[in-house]
Length: 218
Length: 202
Image (cartoon, rainbow over all chains, first blue to last red; front, side, top):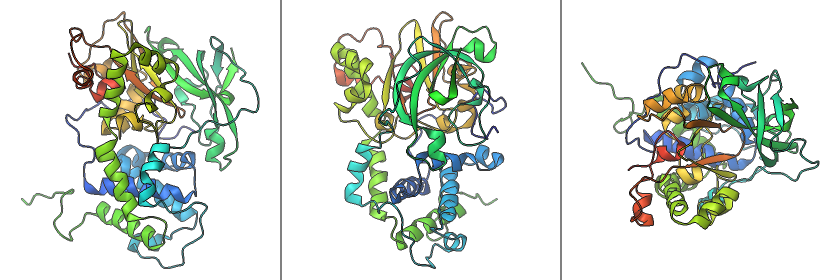
C-alpha cells in the first residue's frame, strides 16, 4: 500500500513556494506544539518509527493539507489514546479525569533539556552479522513494499542501483514501527541513475539510504 | 467586511488549533508527563541556539582548513561535534561537497528528515508535498524555482534522507573570497546553500 507520505515522484502538487525570510515559527501555538511533542517523547511509550507510522496513517487528504505541526499533533493524539494514556474526553477539555497511567520513561525536566537535545539518540546498533553488500555492488530494490511502515520509497522499488557507501548497522525502521526495538540491519547508500528511475534521459542521480532487507543482488 | 485573522487573537479569543494545543499541554502537565518549563527550554534552544548559523560555521571552517575538510569527508559527525554542534537529528551526519562537476541537493520524500543540529528546524517548503514529490524527479525545475540554474554538464545528485543519516551540503566557495576571514565567509553561507537549493552568496 502506498501511503500519502510516500511522495517521491508523485505529480500534481504544483511548484515549490519558498518563503523569503521565513520565521522559525509562524505562530505561538507552533512553538508549544514542537515543545510538547518533543518533551512528551521522554515518557518512552513509542519509538520515532511508530510516530512516523502514525503520521503517515492519517487520511490522505488530511496528510496533504494539514501543516507539519498539525500532522504531529494529530498523530500524537492518536498514539496517546491508543496507549490509554489520555481519553478523547480529556483531550477535548484539557482536564485529567483519571489517574495517570504508569509509563516506561520519565518526565523530561527543564534542566535536562540541553543535555537531551545535545545528546540525541544514536540509531546504530552492534552488528550480529557481516554486511552482505560492499561498495560498488549492483543491487536491485525489492519489487514491492509490504503493507506496514517502511523506509523504501515506492519510486525505488524494483529499480537497480549501485552501493556507494556502507553506512553501518542501524535499528531497522520497519521492525521498530511494529514495536520490535531490538531488530537491526545494515544500511547502504545506494545510487540510482535518474534515467533508471524516471526514463528521462537525464545524467543526474538519486541516492538514498536503504536497509539490507530492501535489497537483492542484481 | 471584518477581517478574520486566524493567527493573532486578543486575550481569551483563541483559535481552535490554539485551544487544542493548550488543552493538550495542560492535560499532559496535570497528568505529570510533561513540564511546561521543559517546553520553554526546547523552544528557546531552537529559537536561539540551534539554527543555520551553526551549519555556516562548519562550512566556513571547511573552506579555510583543509584538514577539517578532510575530517568532514571521513567522519562528519565527529568533525561537526568538535565545533559543538551535535545532537538530536544530527546523530549520524554526512557532509556532501559540491564541486563544479557535482551539485548535491537534499530532500526527505517520506517525511521531513533534516539535519537539525546544524540547520535548526526545517522551513515549511522543505516539509511540503511540492518539494518532497518533485526534488527527486525534476530537481533542475525545483532549483529554478529557487532561482538557481546549473550547467547541463554539472551532475545534480539528490539525496533522499530515507534512513537516520542526515546530510549537510558544503557549497562551492564563491570566487573572489580569498581575503575573507572565517567569520566573513560564514556570513555568505545561506541555509538553502546547505540544503542544495541555493548557492553560497557571491
